[in-house]
Length: 353
Image 1: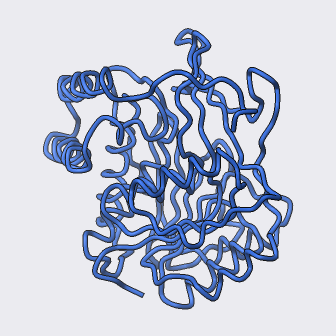
Image 2 (image 1 turned 135 degrees about the vertical axis):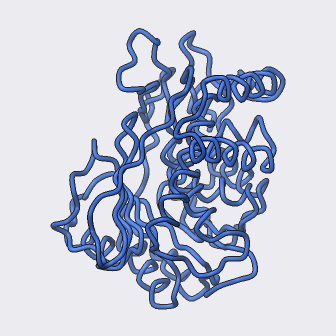
């Protein structure tokens, strides 16, 4: 299932993100959620992308569709339903004195104006089952939580030769379903603060397991002969504006590097995985200097983003670290673009969505 251009299909959390700043002002709502971020980042960087799921037939859902359309995503399998309300996530920025372990925000589904909640809906819709007959060819299938239909689609893609990426935040209520997803996936990535070592779930013996550790970086293991962990430290920034979306940028960057520009077959070679993850960490770090989960896309062009990450990776490869002035140059460039481009205020209450 390879194509001339890398292609990713995915399902999971597609939500509307609303940033709530310290002064109470709210940024313009934007596409978010793990699946939403990973697919839209890769689409912006030149991949084909097909979100698979059901949104509410409401303003929030239309906003998500518009943001996907702006990066050229294939929208045929992102359905709308009058029976749904599109989830809305409020990201409250934290005062710097309250920040611990580089956590810069807290998430809630509760609207700070009216208290209303627009939570995700994970039950499989009967009409959604029909999409399995129309799945596009893809280099990668991405899944951020185990639902019955999502896991079935992952198994279908795996049987066709696609690489399945599973990035769970919790085991969930259905252990058997989680195990199916974990054993199907070629790449399993998770945060240590949410899930422990997944060895007990008997992941694919030829797969890649990635455990992120916040400000302490990450570790991974790959291949069949040596399953020891390889540690990659985090990049050190002169300042952190917002860590939202950091893990999603890391995932997107890893896939971008592993598949190159032609969608060729991936590898579990340890050095290749290490370089791809380092590139992903670089993208993640650069985005932490902006506001929002995809703030970097609002400030730099795709070429600038890729070149910036490559510069950071090359400097660490050559000298073992990245000089603070390198990140300060990037921070100045981001700040200049952000002052004219990023988010406008004006959003009020979830009742308008």
